[in-house]
Image 1 (cartoon, rainbow, N blue to C red):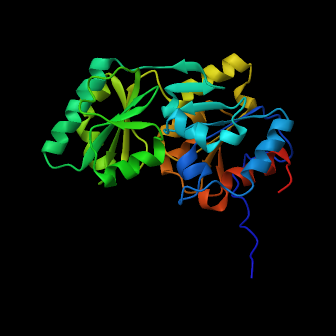
Image 2: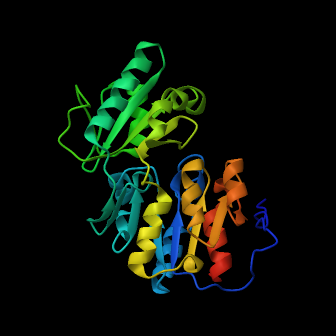
Length: 286
């Protein structure tokens, strides 16, 4: 027997009725996608209705642009992709903004990861370029994790010597990224961002690069205000993005710091929280 979905969580300041929303930005993993990494039911119909209403929908993710473009291939025309945690923003195949790392910094991070591996840490670096991601590890367990987020990836002998603009270095730790890999990268935090973006992932980027900075640049370019922007997130790499929107939603499954930072609470990613909230606030049919 089917059961009705749980009611939307609300906070005291959640307005009722329709809102003048022009831009909706959502994280992917742990937010739009459920724990099995599945697209929520009803997404394509909802995106079609948003397009009819002139509302721009933008995925914002630590995933690479090629991965996001493949996921939304059938509806990608006109869509803005905020990829690689905001370091690479693309619309219709045209770069809108990017924030590349100094190649020597990227090389130092790779060498630091090699040192961790030599000390017995089960970790690997993903050097994220505009054209592809590059890895030195070639074992199947590691590549299986890489493939989830990086459709375009290559195994190379030396990831410190690449003919590509490096925009981020991501590290996958088979243990706890927050307890092992992130502390080991502390020396880089004096000059760069070291962001725990998931249980097993750490991203190193320029200090000027994050989803929030990318979103603010996009708002300025499009003439859209924070009051016309709705944002959804679940993890620490979403914090700055939440600050750029008055309609900021943490998922019910979000990190406590994200819930504390957002203005509102949405149902969990496993309860189709993003689409349920969009439909409610914009008055769309379920």
